[in-house]
Image 1 (cartoon, rainbow, N blue to C red):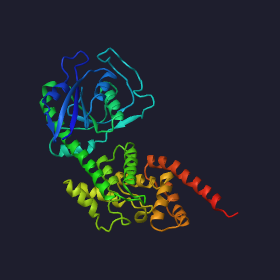
Image 2: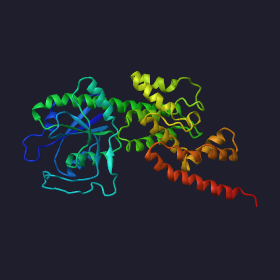
Image 3: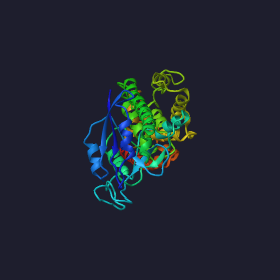
Image 4: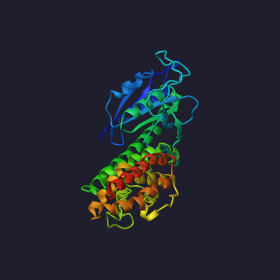
Length: 372
C-alpha cells in the first residue's frame, strides 16, 4: 500500500471558509488501497508549494476552490506565471512574474484527466475538465510541485460552496481512485516490459522503450487533445510483439498484459491500433489516423535518429551478423527518410537536430572510409 498526499487551502480573500478544506474533511483515510495523508496549506505564493515539497508521497492531489464553477474540475496543466487579482494571505500580489525563471512554459499532469472525466460522466458523476489552474496560488503550487516531482501530481478545483463539500468529496474520491488505478496500470506495464526485454542487446531493450515513452510524453504535452493513457500504454507496449523479436500473433503479448489489468475491450483495441501503426517496415509513410498513433509513431522514429539511432543501428547489425557497410545502407533505406515523415509539430522540431547529426555522421564516415 502506498501513501498519497491530499492537500487543501485555508480561507482567503476575507472569506470564513474554503470549500476545499471542507472537502478534505470528508475524504476517507484510504482510497484505492492507498493510505491518505491530509494537509492544509496557506494561501501564500511559494510557501504553500514549499510545504508540499517537504513531504514524501507516491502521488499528490491538490485541492482548491474556484468561484463561478458548478462542478468539480480537475486541471490539465499549470502555467509558469504568478499574476494575482487579489493579494495572498501574506499580502503579496505578484503581477506577471515567472514561477521558475528558466522553467517550462507549462506543467502537464500525467494523469489522464480527460479520459477519467469522460468515463465518470458516463457513470453519472457531475465532473468537468479545466484547461489550467489560473495564475493564483492554486496554479503556483500545481506548477511548482509538478515540475519538481517525478510522481503523479493533480490539481482538482471544486465550486466555492462549502455547504456541498460532502457531495464534492464523493466525486473527488472517485476521480482519485481512477487516477491511481491508471497510474498503477502504467507502472505494471513498465515492470512487464522490463521482464519481456531483459537481456536484449540489439537496440530494442527496455532502454529503447523508455526513451520512446519519454519522447511520446514530451510530444503529448503539445497535443492537448491526445489521450495520455492511450499514448502511455501504446508507447510502452509498442515493441511487445515486434516480429523481429517475438513469434507471436495478433499482438498476443500486449493483449495478455492488457487483459491482466482488466482493460476494457474498447480501450485495448485503441492501444493495439496505436501499436500497429508504429512499425516503419509495415507502415512506411502511412500516417496513423489518431493523434495518439501519430505521437507514438513519431516517438519511436525519433529514437532511430541522432546519436542513439546510430548506436542502435550498429548494435542491431552486429547482433545479426551485418557488416558495417550493411548497416550504413540502413541509413539511406530508413533513417534519413524519417525527418520528412514525422506527424506532429513537436516531432518535426525534435527530428531536425537528430537528422542533422545523422547527416554529419555520414559525411564524416565517407571521409574516413575513402581509399587513399
